Image (cartoon, rainbow, N blue to C red; front, side, top):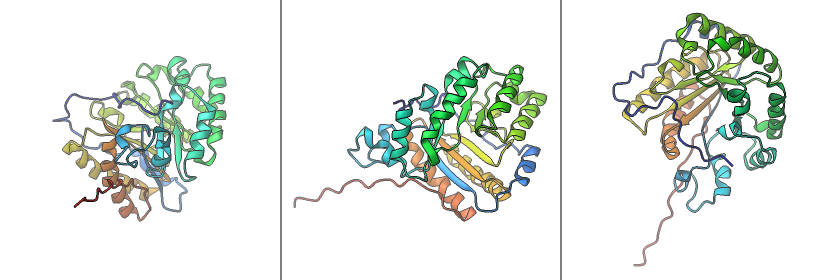
Length: 308
């Protein structure tokens, strides 16, 4: 089913000792985007990971002895969302329908655009493929969160025209989020401004990725009141906890200024390690914003009664 995935390799370093994890200042346009938000109520916050099919969750997040077919049932009652990477490799409507039926109504699937659209054709002549993707997502119903895509590192500012054409056609059909990886999107001031304005104009979320080896992709340029943050930790290195404190402060400020929806996707080399990360930042955000944030609860190991 593709629900068991390898850990995120993008931006991975052999050691994070000495990495400056200081959050960059907000892009000046971020305040403008949030000021235009019409959100009158509290922000909606959904945390999740990249996979529900990791066996490390059994005995920690899932009850001991949980069968693989039951993983999603338990995951979707512990986390509020899933970064659904499996759709990158292909679409199976029957699987999407089955998954939707397994999850509570409040749960959100955030499907990744197929690689045929982003990596093979690189947004060119993909109208039919995009329509097919969106039609398949309809079976998720109210459990559909925000679709998202990663453009490969080879797609840089020289492809802005293709990206513009894609956004102009697609955004009216469905809002989505985009992660850019070519370094020039961030180092070229003109390109950064142009893509930010494009996303802002059409309500597209520019994904923030906090990862050790590519600090540039943490641009802090919000383009929509829907924020997607991918937090890539390092096996509970001490810096993980300091970063979470900084993010609690930054996200609290953004939410108070107009964020409507926050998707916080957690990545660790082993999925089980995300439980402690969620337990650290979820309650902090909930308390600061006076909102309910679903936080996973570890299962209790069965107690073995003494024979004596």
